[in-house]
Amino acid sequence: MKDTHKHQGMRRQLAETVAAKGITDKKVLDAIRAIPRHLFLDSSFEDHAYVDKAFPIRAGQTISQPFTVAFQTELLQVGPNHKVLEIGTGSGYQTAVLLHLKAKVYTIERQQELFKKTNLFFERMGYRPKKVVFGDGYKGLPENAPFDSIIVTAGAPEVPRALLGQLKIGGRLVVPIGDDEQVMTLFVRKSEKEFEKKELGAFRFVPMLENKN
Ligand code: SAH
Image (cartoon, rainbow, N blue to C red; front, top):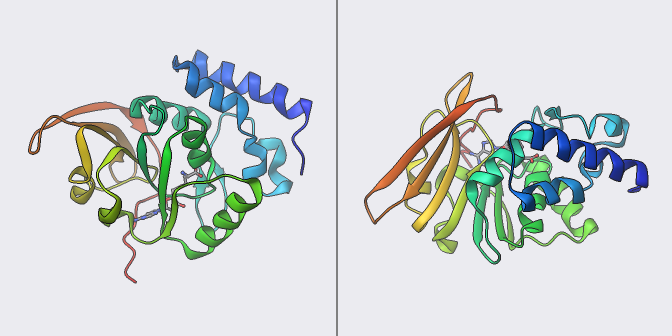
């Protein structure tokens, strides 16, 4: 598949749609305009790539809705060279958005099939996250902590405690919390032991599951 003027036009539209829904961060909107989302889907679903909707990928998982990606990314306040941990690599689209913001990205996926497929895709496309890990996001990545921010792209039944402990002071964790429906939740680490918590509206994600291997 190629990236054509038509795709670029559709992406400009998509960025406008996302902006109309409340996203104001210019760099995030730039990322939406820049990243060829259709290449993150199987070719038969190309037509769905620039609609502001989640879409099934493999293994019962989804590529998050562009608005949701933009909303979570805006909350992270990514700066150049920030160390960012992503839980739920999935299609890799969110990873690509973070890379576009010049973050150093560490990403974890628990579905082996997806992990392999997306890892190859990153290589083919020249996307260079620092690490793509097959493992359990509930554990985070202690060997690379602390992080400037952590984004969870699956619905967690409660806040994953290990992740809070892997934030820098001033660091931000964005995690959708809940079972059927999730509340987007932002934690900011104020000190070693204190976290500020904000709840930012309802979303729907596939569940964050433990990886028992
Ligand atoms: N960021 C992805 C969203 C994928 S959906 C994208 O842009 O496409 C959420 C992903 O989280 C799924 O791929 C799912 O397999 C993964 N996931 C669920 N629980 C997990 C866990 N405990 N650790 C790592 N990944 C997990």
